[in-house]
Image (cartoon, rainbow, N blue to C red; front, side, top):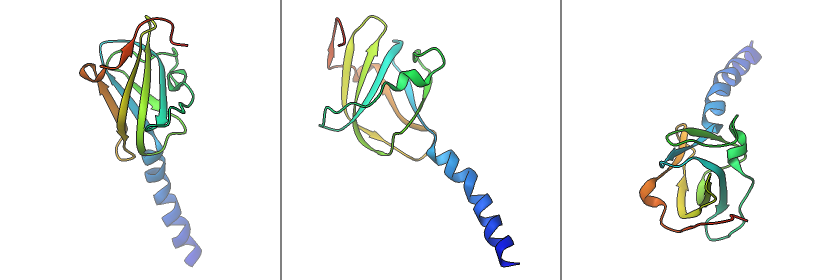
Length: 118
């Protein structure tokens, strides 16, 4: 009889864990982004392009993007738009609570360079 109670508790906990694990970036800029990279703050060790998680491989203005393999913490975020402009937004708090882990707005795009992002 006890194992029914344990199984029931495990099944009840599973959806909450799954919902918590799903994190999103919200593009609150007016630019479509083809590159979204995260690095632990100050490290310059950017991970994989999160924009590739989107079906069209880009994050439109006011679109949300599912993040893969990202945990809560403080990050620097590198964004590359469709014109090749690269912007780095430093010290972003990525939260594990709620669906939107972090958002970046137009006024945060202050450290930007035009040209080839490579």
